[in-house]
Length: 408
Image (cartoon, rainbow, N blue to C red; front, side):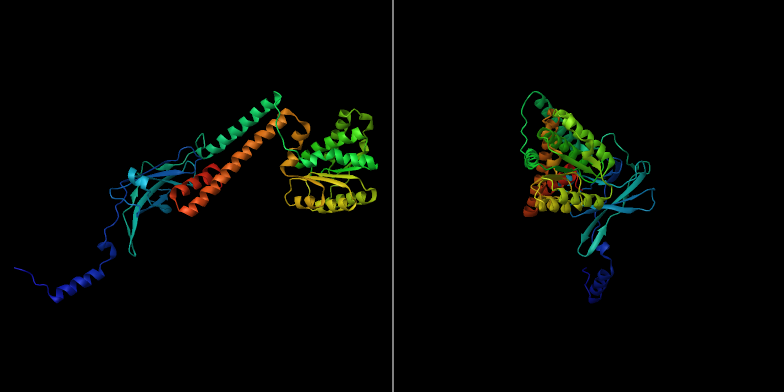
């Protein structure tokens, strides 16, 4: 006997269907089979790996919400939400690394699967890590995140050692000409011909600044040239310790040139620690005595433009050098020669020709080539990611930037 479908029965089914929640209509996503927390290998003790065993039928449309708590069944907070990749689906295992964990602190995790169906979001039950197996982040002996830093450091250090050995064996290491250093003889020679002095300004910082040390290295070459040409060399300083070091440097240069009796201790002197009082003294001296050659080699700030413009006004040959990026434009605009950045620091190896220094200089160039190569590779990968929208390029770009270059 067939049961007749009456209008009342149809109305009842329709009303019940409308009143039922969406969760009773659509099936919930399958919960993870198990969740295990373990320490992330080779790190500084801040990361924990949450290993999620995926159920049968898991898809990339399902997102897994990872929450953690410092107590079992305590207050859980969300730390990650990720969908499995194709490789993870094939392995039926998903590993999510959480960071910012306190070292040697116990953490319990729970994971639930969520899936959006239409406007409704379906969520499975939470699966927790066992009570007796919390995740504990501990510091490892070796930080794997710095593996590439160790490799690059070994390559650079090895290059330095190899180039030093090559230089000691008499192999010629080519260093490009640096115009500012080549012009020292010309500047001192011009001052000698005109019967005027050379003025050397070693910056306004003390001996704890590497730029001051680099400036005094060049002072040794200038002083040796002045001793050979019998030219007057004045070195006013703004720090007493710099004055002492400069006197030693100039005295040694005169001795090396074979004219120790020509050294005058009073030509290397202290003026004042005050920045603009020191600059006022220098500009006044330049205007009154009009030195034929001016050397500004060290750390400079606002006074760079004042000195360079004054020297340009009196017609002196000017050679400047500094590692202060904001001051370089003033020197470039007003001076005849400017040592820019690393040219300034390479002066010692360039002028002395010492094998150890030349080898170090060439070894550092290898490090720059490696760094520049990885930067160009990162730019290429990011560009290709934008053009092709390829996941492979995106993964490679992320690895270069955040693992090798550690820009993140």
